[in-house]
Length: 249
Image (cartoon, rainbow, N blue to C red; front, side, top):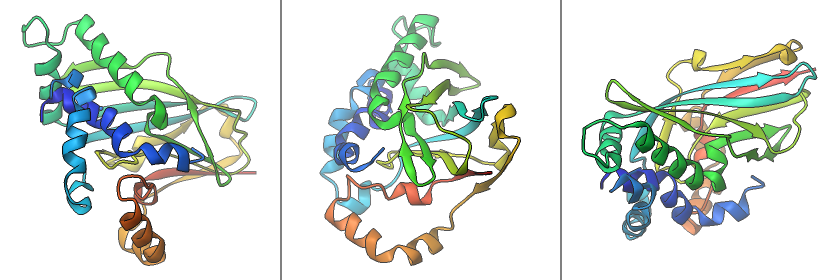
């Protein structure tokens, strides 16, 4: 599978594998990177032909940073993302988007990657999770997704805003995960998830890394039923995703 099919694997593959998620939730991959962003439709068809257990694992890996920015009126202003992708996926993107074959991604080529990712992840809230006192909140599309290629790795920087005002009261959770499990987006250190701005002065926060064994033990019945009834269209990965939790007065 090449770069375009993997960008698609994050985007189009997400759309193909996770179609049911869009109705059930109140809520990048490159063959020719334009085709892993675009080519993943084919990749997805191939993935869907495999047994559920075989396809329920990531193909793309990224290290992430998340900043939850707060405003002086005690609301969430935006969530700022940084994603650094693994070298294999990154090199496939270079191969597939390097139109002039100069072995680097020029500004116009980076812009093509940016637009493809922006379009592909729209229906999945850019893998952003906002839970406001138990209610899932969507996000608005970013103004742009800044893409760079440094030291052999693809970098993406962007910010999204909640689709409606989120007041800093009660318990709020924020995280990043791919509901289709095609991409694994990981926070290596707790310091990679931070709260910024003056609005959270009355809040405490902590990073939560769910214990897989505990999650399985506590949700065994529902996990088993969801996986076997609809292995490609459930939200299981949400239970295992690292998140930052704010508790506000």
